[in-house]
Amino acid sequence: MSYKYKHVILIGIDGSGNFYKNTSTPAIHRMFLEGAGTDNCLTAIPTDSSECWGAMLLGVGPRIHGMTNGTIDKTPYQHRDEHPTIFKMIRDKYPDAKLASFVNWSPINSSMADDGIGITKRTGQDDILTVRICEYIKAEKPDFLFIQFDSIDGAGHTYGYNTERYLKELNVADGYVAKIRDAVKDAGIEDDTLVIATADHGGFGCGHGGITDEEKYVFFVAVGKTVKHGIIPKMEVKDIPAVVAHALDVAADPGWEAVLPEGIFTE
Image (cartoon, rainbow, N blue to C red; front, side, top):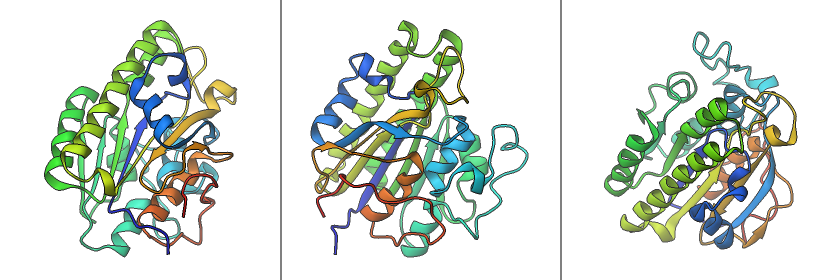
């Protein structure tokens, strides 16, 4: 039996692609030194938020989950019985688990994360959200916490992806990652926590949705006591639920397209 983590924290930095490597981002670079990661995690196509966050939370691509940016506000996720969210899978295995979703982009909480199963949901701007996240970690020590920061994607749409103004905002988000890791340490749960940082998509020019390398390849990095140090040879964003499930000893969903990538865990 593989090691079971007591806590998993999944940090998603919207629109950050793999551009962290073009600026200082000390917290993300530190995670790469301490854990397993890749700059070539393939996201969903088209490279838009609903399609990509949906893949990350469901383990299936948009052809199956059906969510798009054009429909998400009016038509929430429709296939919960056939393809449950990772939140629901954890809840079914652990009825008393503390589950939370702290996001900037509200459709994740209103249309993707399940209602009625006890998920603590918070929505707000990145800086205020980070304060609440750190308070929540120290007070509640969640079993699974999903986080989405959005200001980086806003900077990409406004100033262009991989521009000076964009990279400045990415460094601000990197500071949030550092604060979250500090909160995990302060809560006394660092040794039993898997921390993941990743992105939903990148960008090209002032937009995304296409299939350029800048849009479709994102970074992924994981740090934990059983995580190998090195490069993950191959993975996709839709594989992330398999990583979370493995860490928490939750059985894989039979309807998944997700697979557990090689090169992440020592056991």
